[in-house]
Image: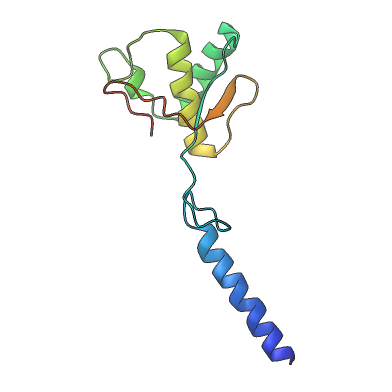
Length: 115
């Protein structure tokens, strides 16, 4: 009896590990969850937005918000800090609650693609 219980326990752990490693998959419903992005909150203070751009672009690739790149225009603090927030969210899985918010609405526009 103990072997059966242990075998069932190990099998359920293995199945759980396999299902949880699948991206955007909700194991209860079998449905794929929508992607999420982290973008700037409306009304975030400009100094905090600029500070986050400076931090994030120091540890993440921000080439796309440089002059002439796909996400440079519109050239404003709001859009550039949203891009920087999302880059950090992709790297760490953490959306900075102080100035950011998660969304399931893709913030990509034109040739600018948020990954």
